[in-house]
Amino acid sequence: MGLVKTIKNGNKMMNLFNTPILGSEKVKMGNSVFYMMVEDLSLKVNRHRTNDSIIPTKVCGNCGIKKSVDYFYSDSYSNDGYHLRCKCCNDKINK
Image (spheres, rainbow, N blue to C red):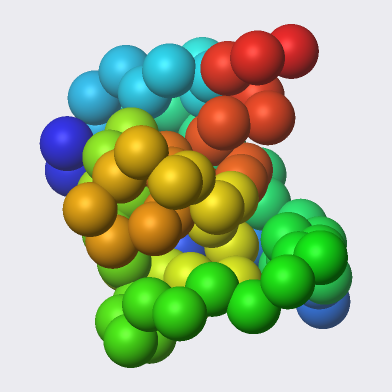
């Protein structure tokens, strides 16, 4: 998975990839085709209780971007206590 470019505009972040990503939109710019994921940075996961994990960041299994654990749902079945995919990817896939 290749992240090509990241564009930040206020609370929105647009990530352009050169390979298809689950939940992404296909965008054509000139002669190139990119796959775009739009992420709202103001939407963090609301936790009812604190997670006792000590890791501060995690790499999303879908988009491959390293993010704060605030952007991952809790998952009691995983080793680190967080879901495999970030909130943005997970919400778009489940949509």
